[in-house]
Image (cartoon, rainbow, N blue to C red; front, top):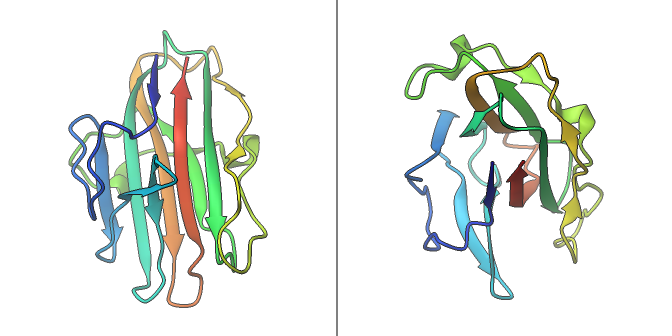
Length: 162
């Protein structure tokens, strides 16, 4: 199990995370570490640079883990850009398009509706119970997918796998 609040990382663009894969699959944008009101989080947007499809893959021992939760905040929202998956066959450094991604997005509450500026607070995603049939090592994967017109800014913080 782990908790990731991004406080140990420097604020930077296109961060290389020692434990995670930050993959600009389409386009040139990566998840960035940002800060506001003394709180660090990751952020992705396609504003001024679409299309983009960027993944953040985090290793998970699904045999030991029971639940997944996180928080999101949206900004200048003009559509849904965030999906959440798990995979048990993604190989770090390989083509994400060849991995089997199980879409679990609908199990979470994702921040939405903030069309001007940014939401005041992060939205709790809720807890996703990992199916007992999912075992072994794998990945929790966040996908941001935007275009030149779908440019919602998405922030993620306080990822918890228990």
